[in-house]
Image 1: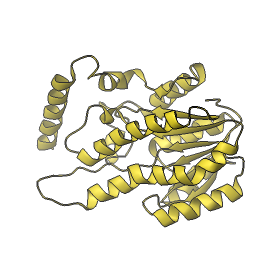
Image 2: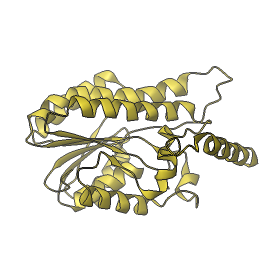
Image 3: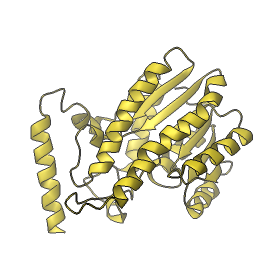
Length: 256
C-alpha cells in the first residue's frame, strides 16, 4: 500500500485502533474520512485533526450502509482506500441460549464490511490504484472461548479476505489484512485500555505503519506480538496454547 496521497475511509474511526490508524494516515497527508455510530467521538477526533472528515454510520444496518456508501461516493469520488475496522466484542455464555450479542456481533463484524465492500467496490475498481484493508484479530487464529462469536467473525473475516484478494488479483485493488494482538483500547471496556498485558496502542500503530511503509507488498500486517497466535497451528502448538490461554482467561474472570 502506498501510504501517501490517498483518500481513505476508516470505519470505527472515532476511537481505539480505528482512530489511531486514521490519525496516522492523516499525519502522512492523506485525506481521511472516519465513520462510526457515535457523533460525539467523531467530532472529538475531527477537532483534534483539522482537515479530517467524518460521517455517522450504523454498520449493523444494511439500509444505512447503502445510504452511507452512496453519499460517500458523491462526496469523495477520489476514494481509493477503505479500512474495515468497525467491530464489537462481547462476552457470551453459550449455555444460556441468548442470541442478541451474537447477532449484533455478526452484523457488525462480518456483514457490515461485506455489505460496504459490495457498495464501494465499483468506485475502488475505477481508481488507478486502491486498497481494501480488513482488520481481523489474533483471535481469528486462536480463539478466546469467552467471546466465541467475536472470534468466529474474525476467523470469517480472515477467510473472506483471502477469497477477496484472489478474486481481485488481476485488478488494481490490493487487499490487506491487519491482524492486531490484544491492544490497549476500550474494546472490552475501560480496563483494557490500561491492562499491562495488552500492547500499548501507540506501539501497535507505530509498528504496523512501519510494516506498511517498508513492506508495501505484504498481504498481512502482523506485529511481532501477534505472531504466536497467528502461527500457533503452523508450529504445532495450537492445542497447548488454546488450553493454556483459555484456562488463564477463565481464572482471571473468576478472580474478578
